[in-house]
Image 1 (cartoon, rainbow, N blue to C red):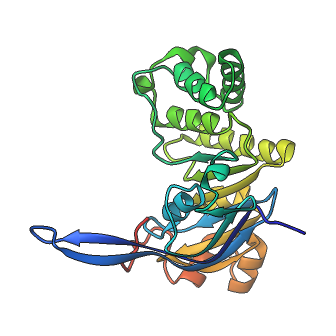
Image 2 (cartoon, rainbow, N blue to C red):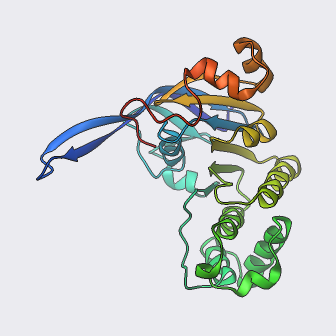
Length: 267
């Protein structure tokens, strides 16, 4: 029986926020409202939405960092949160603000991560170097401390780290944040090669139209915690009767991708 890489049904998530002088007043802020979708094996699915729409919350749930309030979430056939440990062994995750040991070098950070995955020191270093080379990072920077590297270089390291165990599913939360145009193109090409050569399933959140158009087989529009539309790029433009993805987003969402959230939704 066919099993999608990601299956989400009626997913909802809210957060309690406290305010007031003594922070005694609590209110609930909705992040996701009854979200349902699925991602097929080997597919690149893009979730497009403005900041504050709930994209990062969804990524954190899929990567087992948050527990849903209601609904069913299955990742690679495993249920969140019952099978969190099994899911973590099969996914790679890249966030816009990746955490590293900033005093250590790029090499030390990646070798340490490789050791946690069970690689030998030599195997971890070889795989990391090969990935960074394909991402356009010069090998001479491999010994530089992370604190001396640009945000874009650190983001490339984050991608290399996520790919060390060769995961069948890659979760990317704004993966090209901080990258210059040349580096963005290198990341795009690398992800396209990864999908073609390894059959990796990629779930991508972004607010970049170019990124979504180039990389994604299907695209979902997330606005104020709700999935307002999803489908192939050409189908979305056809239904919206527009020529561009940006205009299609405006037609379905009632706002531009850069508009501030209009209700209490957190990212």
